[in-house]
Image (cartoon, rainbow, N blue to C red):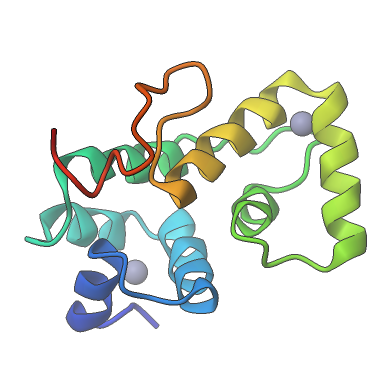
Length: 127
Ligand SMILES: [Zn+2]
Ligand SMILES: [Zn+2]
């Protein structure tokens, strides 16, 4: 089931709750067609396009949590035990640590730590 055009627009405009955001992000992970639809949404800010790039760039790696778990981690959609496992894995795994930082930056609408320009509302206000 693909998200409806309305859902894509609401997602693009960041008008969805955490649960719906998590569900759509999981779908985007698996569906290049919907990533294209998202990119085409008039509500999708230029800076937000990083999001599809980050999601599309998540690789399967042997021994690492699957990409869908990394996405779920970043929106707090995991059970606490699983969350702890991934946190511990990311401490030892620079690849996952980088993915999680990039995904969490999307959630906050800011740049990853270290690239920040001192504006917490980076993606919302265009300045
Ligand atoms: Zn789709
Ligand atoms: Zn890893």
